[in-house]
Image (cartoon, rainbow, N blue to C red; front, side, top):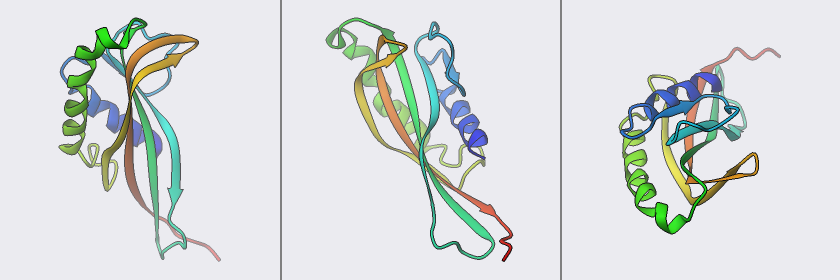
Length: 139
């Protein structure tokens, strides 16, 4: 189900003005900036299990790459507007197109992101997603 959740997040990312590309898998290169790359960071399964339902909380990293290399101070005006825009956009799309119960950005890291030893200026957002699935448990 995490693939469907990531696909839902990418659909939302593609609605954000100024985003040129959003990837569901790590691309071989980041040539079409600004772009998002979204991937699972960690997950937590509710314990003990409840009858007939499994609740999973996923934390996804949504790395927003805005500029290849350069000085963070000079890219600051490019990065700042994305903070509120991304958070607000995800607040208006909490079910990610019906792929989860709820979701929302819970934190971000602003600055230099490195891919294949290449520095990019950007923002690493963490999107928390709650998924519930019906499950038949066998004894």
